[in-house]
Length: 378
Image (cartoon, rainbow, N blue to C red; front, side):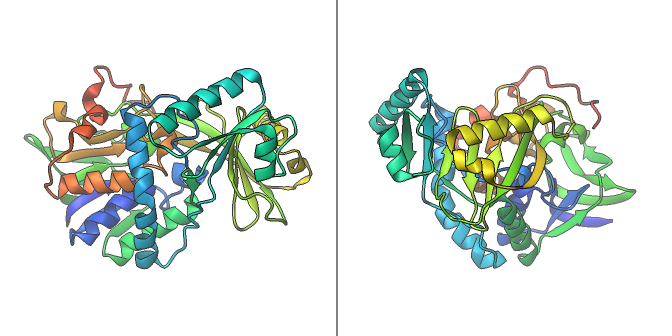
């Protein structure tokens, strides 16, 4: 039998970043995962920090995403100090391209309301966009330049938060599925893993697309959403910016890889790549940057994003279960990397007894009346 202040189920970037913050506060933390840390959505992402680039509504979630983006500069400095890993935080900005008049009008409207909100964004003609990045297609009609939308190498970020958590004293146990969450009255008291009991004052479910399979007293409405992706190899460093197009995004890495994504498919726990999916991504990327067609393929993969019915994350306790010490940090869908700093901050503050801000109310896990079937199997 083991004892911990906090047990975290899920060793992705969200679970390990929360573990790091709690370990910094001298809590005894155990992180459990059935796989090696970060092997699912965290490693499959592209690392874009781009709330402005693809948002057309200035709603509360947009502001929540901006708040997390603003935390990133300090977050990566502290993370580098604790882990010794450079997560390649790049600040060149993002270019959003339009090919048609209709797409151009959408970008023009987006630029107008974002400037009115005090955000930095530039509306460019196609010619101006090509001066900024000469590799862009001559068919691009207009573009946005978003200097504040940045990127990190998500695989290095995942390794860094895992390392930082370990160095601060958190323990990670991989290859172990949680068999049962133990309860007594209105409290979660621990977990059972392969016959071993781990007692805990707080339990956090951060298992991404698998969060609904844990067998918690409240079943979170999380389902997997497949995203197919690929990487090309480049010998030059001609591409500096992250690129959003109507049919693909393109993310250049310092090591020469060019990440291209992503599909959005609700196909259960199937992580297969398909000919149609990869063909569509390549076509969309080459349409924007024709020179990509001559580059060799480095890697093809797919990840499962944890989606929710309204596309918003699940953050905090499910109060309908009556268990204030059973906390959810899941359902981040396409924004897991972007929302890592703010999730680590608000969840750790919650556990450390600090007041829960009003801004978290839209992300209450039990805001749905009918959670998905918890008996679905992967």
